[in-house]
Image (cartoon, rainbow, N blue to C red; front, side, top):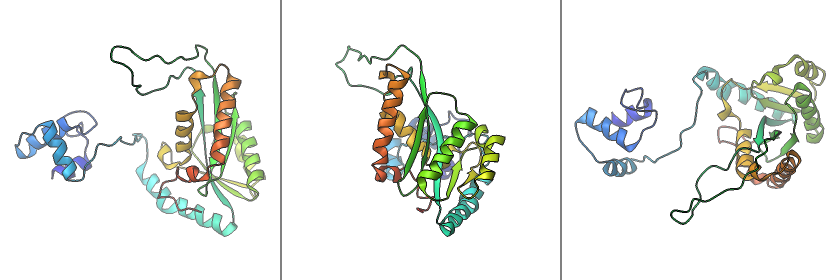
Length: 261
């Protein structure tokens, strides 16, 4: 009963605390259900003994439609993959992200007690944007730009993607307004033999393996050290070129739920 309650509900849904199952809140659940008082240390040992570990939770939007997500995973994506295989096409997952110069490195740094470490950052504010596509065999395509993400930018990227892939590409992307714009739809209609666009369910970034590339970029490209937008763009391109030569890392972005094509 206790384990089922923890699996099916969050503490706030049971009106005993916040959104995360901490040792203190598990202890409160045990006290409420079975009338036994346990220390936090005891709760930790008890949880580990039953196969529980502390984990960083995935985030899900309240606006996500679970039925559409299930249909995507069980019906829509398998159909796309089957068509791509029959057409000898490639499936490419596409996304865009931005890097800002005023974003300081997160996390902690070891230092002598009483001496707070200092990280030098650029006081100027600028950003670069990245449009990327990855395939489960390890291919990576990208463009880095400093302007806004527009239909023109997306169309130019799709055109180059089809040329560089050398065969038809089934592109999977989120439901960004640019992806659904009239200009993009018109271009896709004229290039149906080269590119076919498929949109994932809304509010579901966890379904896109390219999100892991975005996180990889933000973790390794130190935007706060860049002195200009050109400097930041150069460092970003250099990192992405390195990842292009490391297909085993790109393959690691993919969850087991997606079949390797």
